[in-house]
Image 1 (cartoon, rainbow, N blue to C red):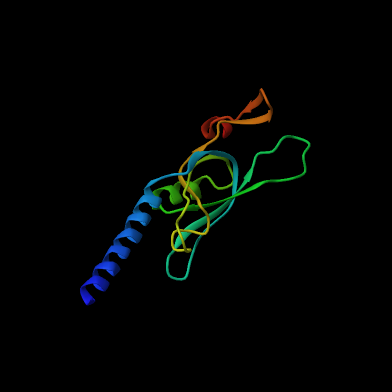
Image 2: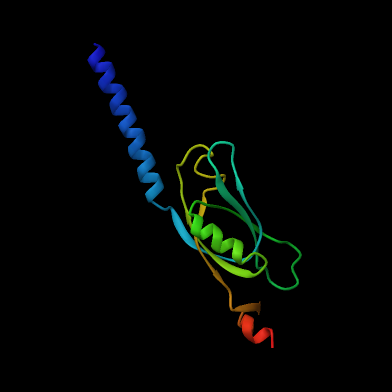
Length: 138
């Protein structure tokens, strides 16, 4: 009887571990978000994660600002985001579903890459190029 209970507990723990491994590696969706990172900090009591907020680019003339809440686990990605604070950026993210608790992050959107945007879109099809930093200082 004890052996059956022990085997059941081990099997349950293995199933839970398999679920976490699957949910961590599999992405429900992935994509890009464009805007300005306006908040980014390392948070957590026990499990420290980088949590951020990006104001998304909206169409001219609209007063509503959509915010994209995201989490970063990779230190190199967090450092890259800190370097482009205040600039228009594209964040590449993966949406993870099925990760319980806050140790994985406060959101289900995990940013895996960041690139500074080279142009600002005024309306669909109309863009203003942003000069490189070296050309802007002359």
